[in-house]
Image 1 (cartoon, rainbow, N blue to C red):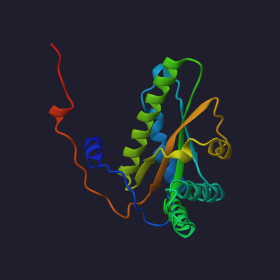
Image 2: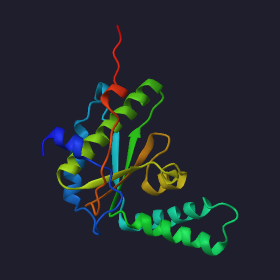
Image 3: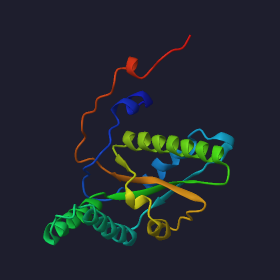
Amino acid sequence: MDVLEAITSRRTVFRFKPGPVPNDTIERVFSYGRWAPNHHLTEPWRFTVIGTDTKEILAKRYSEIQMAKAPNHVDEVNRKKLGDAGYTKFHSKPTVVAVSCLQGEDETQNREDYAATCAAMQNVQLAAWSEGIGMQWSTGPITLEDATYELLGVDKQKEYIIGFFYTGFPEEVLEAERKELGEVLRYTD
C-alpha cells in the first residue's frame, strides 16, 4: 500500500476480531512512530504495551467509570449492566498500547513534543493500516487518572499520557466522509 492510499483509506476501527496482535508486529508498526518529525530530535514519544494482568485491572476500572457516568435515577441493576458492558467493551480491544510524551519545564518544548508525539501516532496508524491492523485512539477519563499512571509505571511529572491505541484486526471498517478542501484551506494576500 502506498502512503497516499494509506492516508485516504485508513479508518478508526471500533470493532475488532478476537486475538491480540503479535508482539513482533506491534514492534514493527510502532517502530515507524520513531520517524515522525520532532523539534531538536527530542524523540519524546513513549509506547507502553499493556499486558494481560494490567488490562484486567484497567477493564475493571473502566467498568467503574461507566457505572459512575450513569445519571442518579438509574437503579443499581441497570448501573451494574452499564459496568458489565464497559468491562466487556474494554476487553474487546485485543491489544492496548498507551502513548505518552515527555514533559518538562519549558511550555514551548512541551507543545512541540506533544505535536511530535501526535505525528508519531499518525505514522503508527498508517503503518498498522498497511498491515491490515486497525486502531482506535482513545482519550477517555481512564487515561487521565493517577492510578493509570502508577499502574503503567509512567511518572506523571515527566510524561503525559496522550491516549490509548486500541489495536487489532478489524471486524468492521466504517466509511468516512471529509469536508471539501475549500472548507478547511484558505489563502491570504
